[in-house]
Length: 116
Length: 113
Image (cartoon, each protein chain N blue to C red):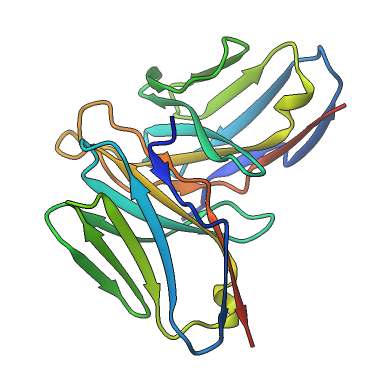
């Protein structure tokens, strides 16, 4: 089955602009998480959505926001871009059930954002 | 506050030898642990996991060991192959209603032919 799909794969923005990234999860997966990867910082959790509701949130400023649609597709938005927002943004989906809140994450290939 | 720590940023191993990647955690609520592997320009891929009710899980060349009292886990790769060269992330979670995966910063493994 198709994996997690992220668009766009690469984009360049300038400071002060805003950006929207899109993620389509694996069919049947209702949970979508977003992570930021920067050199030396590993994968930092942004937020997780499940059934159109934000289920969990990391320690990022309010400029970072997201949403999930009824078909489980998700978008994240970063407003007023800063140079430090340059990173690889990874989306991951997983199949959560009522009896298990674990479950491996399946990652997309990421959206590489460069802020100039 | 880094709850999952991979203190060694890199490791270099000869092909055929054992690779041991270490990970420490501080949150005693964590009870599910995973290892992910990442190649450049690709997303991380799941490698192996272990729950806190076990102290060892094996899958082919990959074995994960968990020492709950020391809050330490390790990934053993035997024998190491050049194709194993990648960044390895350790991740942990609790199994509560709002669980999320917390990742370490990653270890870059280089396997020399």
